[in-house]
Length: 402
Image 1: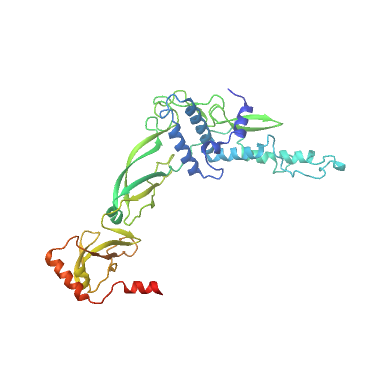
Image 2: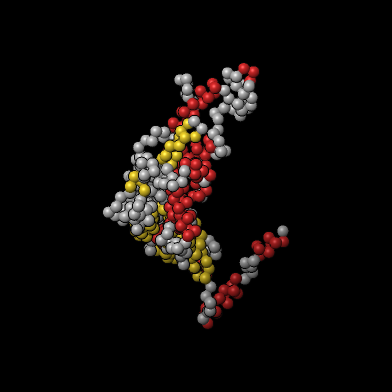
């Protein structure tokens, strides 16, 4: 078993935030998510006979043991801040004047007197020195083993591809998710069924050990149990002592009507199960929408190209138009309708809750027969003669001349 100086070295020289790939300002949910992602990637079952992955798995687990608990994380942060330079940071300015109680200023720059020491260690009935700092920073006196804290479950990410009409009308889908849950074999204990974790013999179950340095004592996480207070002599064969296992489950996810391609929706409480009575995380679903052979979309409106024959556009006609709900509506195409004209059918677009329904926008596309019968050819030739001097490109050419 390594000595206390090595424990201090771990706390001061190991950057647990870097180990998990998170910033020092990351919240608890982000830290947990990062740990679980790395734990799945580096787990011994996923990387058999991979020594490097095994060492990295231990590193990540050690980092989460510290950063995953709010109290231990606060101690770690303060310890690194106070001792990161290799020596305690004094609660005095770096460029003090003459020391109190030292006539003539014998303390010099950075020096301190007996009065400073009294302040430092909280003597003489004063407070605010290192005694107060370390009483808050470290749990001096041993204390009892920490009670497990409830933790919110991790958020889960998934992706689905919907048909155009399912995205338009909404649909309920069964999603198979892989999430890290409490190990079903050991119930999260980490020990093989029929066995139990044992109180750590090094710290007697406190999770910390006390060390003297420079005339004062402070506690630090036990190196043998990494602050857990227990050791597992016979690890669970499923989770290898972590207390967690990757589980596959099915979630019925309701996709609301009107979702768009690339939209990310949130289903509250459908993520990973919380620990210690904590709430479940959320499920985030990235939506992909397949193209439709007839319909398109423009915001809340549904669009389509409406083929119209030349005679229908020229003489006028009543034309049936399909709608996304499977029905048809009748549109009156007036005589002389030009190619590209758009007709609007109210309320036949996207149906979204708490929002007005969109419209169906039908844009006229003049359909020309690929071939003509003899009678049709004769009729068109007669139309050409009857058209007379009308030039459909006259306006276009006049615009170029100006």
